[in-house]
Length: 254
Image (tube, rainbow, N blue to C red; front, side):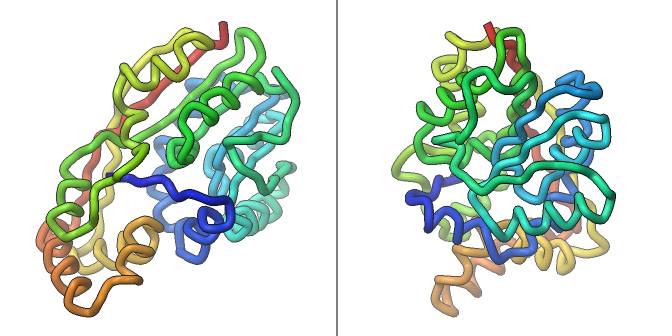
């Protein structure tokens, strides 16, 4: 399962140091979908929560929006700022925790979070903050992973299941409605994410180095455990293709 990381410093470290931008690039169609679904226009005030390397924030800025991106990882933010500078885009990137957003009430018209806010350990605080900063009639967009075959492969490889709040809980309709339903009119959609590499080896190199949860877990395993896990993952990825269904939650602020 996808486990949250507790503690601000440990969470920042957890999401730093990997080549996450390589995976983020494969989310491009999802980022496009998020921006389109939010109907972002010139002047729209946008907060990209847990923005990572800026995939949604940069697209919103290209559409002429007034964009702020916030993330707990200074490392990811540095990459986002560099990408914005390379394109000549103006985006305010802030370091901070989505469980305690440093912004005023009802400050933003659009609040996206693509595979980001779901990883915060306190789901109730996170949901309350997303609602607090979103204006009445403003729009929310979240993407999340369900508990699927990819995570089951991880369990077979020896990665432990969560013992606390789990990011995949956000994919359950009863869970996200309990968290957000009082503040938002909600709509559930799904989509497919797909990576195609030239070989299983190339795909393993990508996911093992650029997915922070997998990379960090592998880094602390003994050689024997790591070797066994690698065999399980390589067998699953042998075709060079990884496909996952994601959940797309859209909301309109009440």
